[in-house]
Image (cartoon, rainbow, N blue to C red):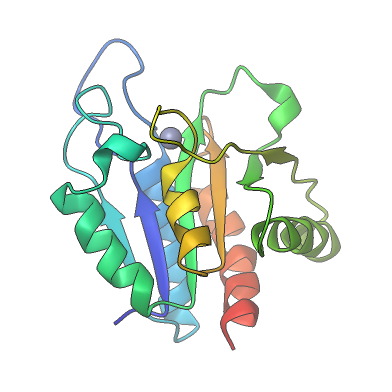
Length: 184
Ligand SMILES: [Zn+2]
């Protein structure tokens, strides 16, 4: 069982002319899991293999899918969840990387702690965005919602999609060190 679970619910990116997925989410998650392994932290990456347009794996209605059931098994045994996404670069206010959390529980504290850590260690300003809990009526961030329900510390990371592999690796190293400090 993994100490850290990396969910990548929008990471399946078949060739397309328009944006239909989180374009650098899988590469970001792989960079993170590599940096975590380097530190001796066991991490599992859960990349979806179907399109967000078919079933959005970050929504309530995806509960019960094989992807979400496997993720849940891993989450129940883990110490921390990182929900990894990416966003189009047309949002300069969001920085190279921002975090999203749900109010209540440990996620807000983790988000602030992460923001302080990244500023202190690499001088990077990480914006914080408040997410929405999911409901039966839909919407929201369901993976974070489940994490909160089962008492698993969690944070959602959003990487800007024009970041190259070199920069993603540079960012992954301090994120992995921060992650390690949260699970011991
Ligand atoms: Zn996403």
